[in-house]
Length: 310
Image 1: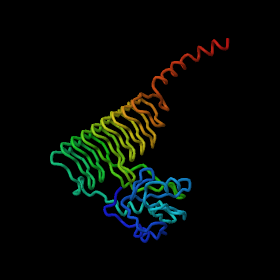
Image 2: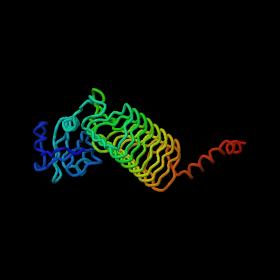
Image 3: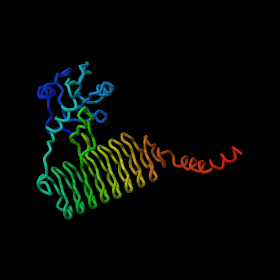
Image 4: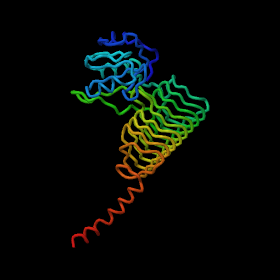
């Protein structure tokens, strides 16, 4: 998430009573997670085993709960609870504003777009030319819908990320400051749900087609011209390449990369990165030919053991 106006690290330190370590000249331009951080971003770290990763990231400002030496050109903000400061920065930049109308007056909707009854459009949503938004669709705040996009009934776009911080008092919800971006010529089947990012964007690439009841997690990035069948679940921060086909009920865990032109057959479970151009099957998913050979061999095991123990 980029700030509407860049802010100096000294101003952040003063506001949250944090001790500034390192460069006082740093200007914060946005907020992000460690693995997605860019120059100018603010991140946080509150677990020692992740300190090194955070300090070596591209982020310019690091909220941290231990006094350590700042890398050159970076600013550390030492504070008791980095998560709370991080979350409050997001809330300050993007406060929760409940809808009072079905279509927010801040939404920008192209005059050629068609909206059926009971469509709900959140604050600062953009909908491009020749879109067809069918009945009972909800499009959450800051979502961007391209041109020639079809969204079937009951779809929810831009729901909160399923992302919590575990504390002694229970789970603390993060403010989802990211967006959903739907590129041109995408079709989304009935009752799909697409979560916005925690701090970055969830992206559905141009020409991709989603069947009914597909769940896309926060900050997932789906490439161009993909086919995703019914009841597929894609976890957060996973990157899917171009022209990928996921058959029905495939499950994909978080933080993976699936290469271009991969096919994953039905009911498979993807638990590791998949190499481009191959077909996969099983749980955990593996090369389909190898899995079929294993299944064929398993069918012969009863006969093998009956002969072996004669």
